[in-house]
Length: 558
Image (cartoon, rainbow, N blue to C red; front, side, top):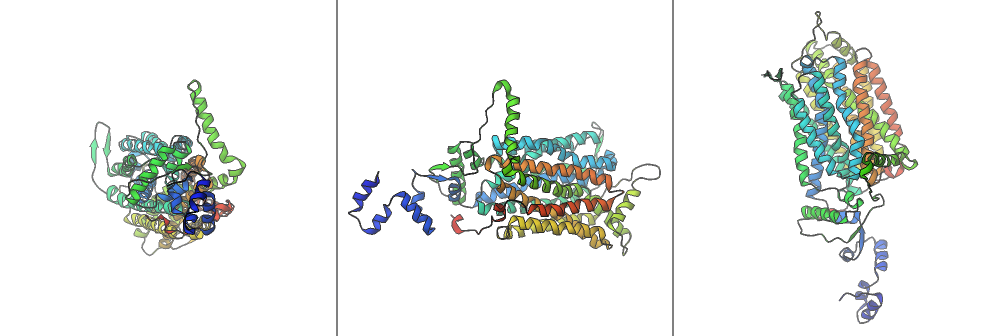
């Protein structure tokens, strides 16, 4: 029979042996003994009248099938972003005659998707922090697929430019929010590995891009569409293929719940409990997880939104402003500036320079195929290629297919990406994110400088491929950023930092387009040396991130 007071406990305990008395000690005494011994009191977990922190409730759901599912889906969302934005790089060399693509227009088409992301990042970050993670990710991904479908039938350059702008506007909703969504389903000790796991899935998805480009683009078929005034060619189909992952992810999100940590921060405790119970059922195959009152974490402040119908827009903008300004207060200013600066330069290389990767690597492949045994500097090959872009009569040289070697180098890069993420997933909790970021940035950026200086074309091409592996740092930096900010600012922080990254993408694509033909070496020098400088800035991130390493325990098992 359960006693209602300490006095009753003492009376009843007088008739029992010493071992029974230990079980009837006051709760506070038992808690002290648990803290001193480090042993978990299982009976304590079953008491419905006690409150527990969210982290303990999440711990009880264990790590299982649900976690694997959400890791895979998060990786596919990131893969979709890559396919939608970077797939354009494979289209430009073969679509330049159909769309009249000069170097200037290629730069615009490469950058316009990131412009859409920049315009919407702030909005999606605000909505994700105030309305919910899933409520932003799901509709925006589906909308981006619809726009992709229409852009496949674009009749001219300006129409496809507008449609790719809209695609970037919508796809931004999932690209940044997914980090916060995934992270909030995991404990501190499993979060980094979960993010590296999703990054590994992302890399596997990215590996499909050169395969898909080779299978789809390098075909000879075409279908005239007189009612649109276009000839439907393989590169148009490739646009749709790149967006199919988004359709799958958008539909799959109907079967996933909202982040329980967000629900708790929004004072929707019962819904948060239901989500945790669902996770427990999927992971452990048991019917019910009994949870007492949940206490928010220290970083889980209450989310309040007050909208007055008389001034809806003004209130909306004020709330968005209030959601953003804490990122630039003294407590977070240093972290925000370092993360945003680093994201800018990483994206300038990974997206800005990468948009010209098929063009440069295809030029190098053509040179190696037509001049076997000869060697030439990377930039000299680029100069020669651009010199013969137009025929003597002023017409543009048309390319219907890419060199097979181009796809091989692309595939090599994606294999190295996947291998890097798999390796980082094993060591990230032992070495720490800051150390890993520093090593990644310095090493792979140095490979870019070697690629420019090396006079042996085949080896220079490999070092050029290695330069883009600096993109691995994006996911590691994302994992660190999630831990730098509290729950109510986390999605906004990710969106702001990635918005700066996309500014770097826009600057990079146009910066490279403007300088590549005349100042190829300078293009690499500026981007690589700036990136190395960012590696040293990262060392000044808060020590709490540097020290957040730890070992897995067996408590995750059901």
